[in-house]
Length: 392
Image (cartoon, rainbow, N blue to C red; front, side):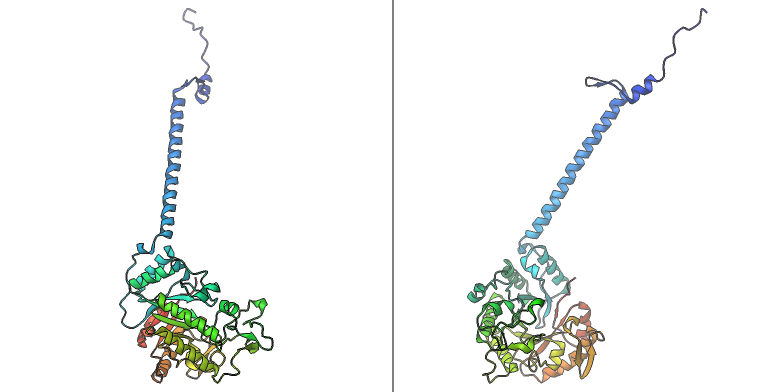
């Protein structure tokens, strides 16, 4: 047994165990592979933390840019000048929020440039009676009409004019719930009671209206119109120059009507004439639905308003402006049976004939909701238009 090996075989379990479960003596590792794994883990941690920092920086930059865009001055916007104005208004309605400036204004300005517009329609006064532009008219301030005016409104109007855009100031007239509530003697009253009349029941959020026979109401509106001209209006569009048409209209009492020698229609025409006088060289337009422009309306006007002293009639061809039906050339069409294109094609030639018989009103400004109707207007040789986009 001279060459017999008496040494005991080495256990193989030691190495795998040590490999998978290395021991640590101070800051050194017993197994080389454990050290490599540790370095890899440390490297992954560093990469992870660096990624977090980069992500944080990117989010911070994106947020800063967004905040800067929303707050930037309107002078930073350079979306182009207005298309040439040759006496024809190619207007787009500006969303109210764009009067604040920032992104909303930038987007709208870009839309104007792409559409090659030369005019902007702005709601200077709403049906709620609120003024969106800043003015110092004492009565408007005292009743709170200027409380919600946009801070940047006048600056934006000036910027648009500097870029060559004509400003169409849309002013709701006798549809004014605020002034009717706050100005004594200006409101329509309830027949037999003297209480403030509402155009619907209180349960259905009825609102008061201004009385066209009231001198207080008319003076207030004419002063607001004058202030809109001072603010830069190039055209004043008078909306709701009418008596109310509502479920409670039969109960409305108009103080001053009984003793007046003027009919309701005459009172409305006189108001338009006075508005034109207040505006001076700034032209006035009267808003009419297509049906009212063609046929008049006994409830709203006790006749027609197409032949007023306004230079333009803004005729609304949008489907939203048709209540249930429209009569064109003696033929009646239900709202479901006629589209805007057909309405324009049938009504415009008749309206042009009416213009030839009118001594004051010189032209119509179609109100539409989409550019797709522009070729139809061009074929009819109508170059004026106002586009009011439907809410998305």
